[in-house]
Length: 335
Image (cartoon, rainbow, N blue to C red):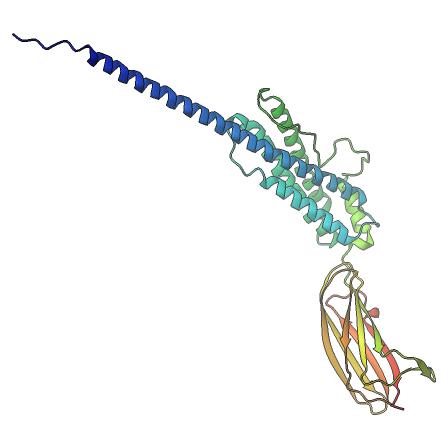
């Protein structure tokens, strides 16, 4: 009977393969752990970078909001108040968007608190802007105090949530790298002026401030070109020239932008009673701004007596007494 020869290499090879497989499993598991660890560290770093930037924006917005409330009154113009409130809302919304990221579970608590805080701040700032503008425009009257107080409460929720975020960050293991976060409060719990966040007082201040109510008002003055150089029996005399024109200087004297201003020139020949009109317009005139509308090369003859009238028109003009400029003049004939 023949026997197979003993082959010890077979068992060695089997053990070697088992060892190789086991080694591969350990290596793969190690790599997976390291990748998971690196992913978690990267997610944590990304979160704190976003949180640091969001905190900086929130600090700026909260300071501007407090300064704005303190300045509300006769010295703060409508346009400036609107600009500040818009800046606060936009900055709060920008800070909220920074936290639209995925984070590892190890920092879920800080993320949740900060996300709640940023959302409450953004919502509260937008509500405060809406309500204050509504009070200025007399669109919110009966429950103005309640609506303004509700917007302040949203900001207070954000302040509380941010405080919990700072506490949750401090409770993280010491080996977790993170920035230092300073306190932030839109509604200062211990303000130097206790009436700063008194909604009823703020509503009364806004309602009584003349410059905060919307005023639509454009005015006009005119200039003849060439300019008069003397007078005849009290009537200005314009020297002879090849052409004559009149310029209308239109000024927005209100606190609301004038999107479209109708500008009309009417010229009457006093000697013949004949007249004509020319219509033009000015667009997008900001509050306090002026623009010149020229009426060049008028179809009149030298040697006559004329009356020129320039008028401006906008919808809802609160002050019509400055909407017209008129001048009677003599245009000298050629000598």
